[in-house]
Image (tube, rainbow, N blue to C red; front, side, top):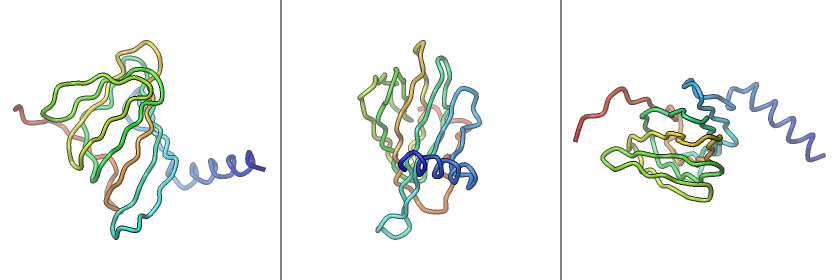
Length: 135
């Protein structure tokens, strides 16, 4: 029964367009859930982000906070104005609202994170950043 529900949920998510893949080669985002919060105007989105070896999720922002839990592999993150940090499976990272950041997989195997976003409802989840001003 649980497997039937999971299969139906996967099909429903795919058909509704909420299970998506990032357009950047080697980066795939799979939305797991999207829920309205009790705080007016906010929602939470949970997604699994897979980054292939050598691939980079380029500079981008979110209209809210991102809470990251590294599921597997090694991922290097850089937040605007900060030095890059390397995280391994089990490590966590908090990205404040509106802060530009990027992620890179320097490893030889897949890197994956569970991303939980607390964002403004109705706004694009990912906003690409073409260039950042130099500090």
